[in-house]
Length: 390
Image (cartoon, rainbow, N blue to C red; front, side, top):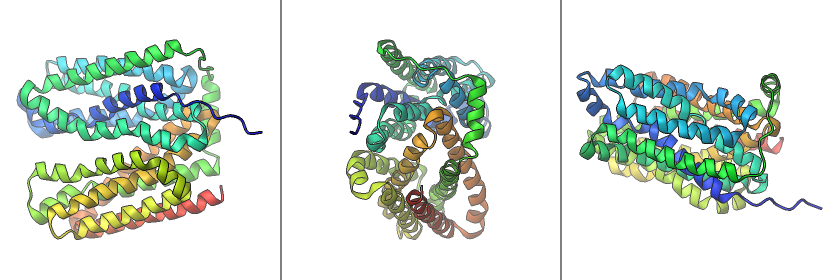
């Protein structure tokens, strides 16, 4: 007989989504307020942009470390502690009296916020049966998507009327509330994580890297991240070069990507049921290729807006399939495997932007978008084939 399905811990997942909202919002919160920070410390925007750079570097580099920590001390325990720590680091950002102190504070803020999203996905992998896991992860990602969308918008509005320091106080408050809620959930749970010795965790990393399926998933997400960001990162520059529109309009158009993600989160149960994992991966890649071509060929700036929404839908169809497989590619070392997955995705982003920049400078936006779209379609097609032979 089949074992009965476990109940889905919806309340805890909702609190994890709230923490992921704050984590994702903190990634992009400084983008619109860089001029204000530069004015406050009498420096240039370029120098002030270091508060963005250092956050991103520590956010990416800390992923694997949190994989080891999560398996050693418990995923939910680590998330709760780091969410509360993020409230402290965000508050320090608000109170920084010089640009150097703000840069150091953002360095630590990136390190604390990095634990939340990948360990949350790993924890969901532990608690939710595989058959129902993909729609649940899609619902959890709503918090992350909203954070990416609203982080910039809210930061701009708050900075305009209340000052840039209040932006960090808002983030601190959100981290504090969600961290307190997660701590309460942790205290109410009867089960406690079984510690994994550090030596065993390191051994598991070596075992993972010798597993063919793990390497397939990691290579897929690396190429996906490189192709997506190697193309989409230059959409704003392409629209500016072709149509000369203002930066606020560019932000609205490019922001449609997040709206596409929300559409996927709402439709995920139906899409997963009708298409299955392989169908979702292939369809997501094809949708991305079509959307990228439509953006590059758009006759007017606003004609690209629907295509950016469709691109977001296609990305989450493909990426959520990869994420779900990442939670199951090594169940005995789920924190580390999801952390490796996140690290490969971030490394792919960096590689893609580096490779895409000279292509954009030499050939323009259309060839770059067509190449990126073709690669993404290839990722979806090949991953579908790999799923059949898994």
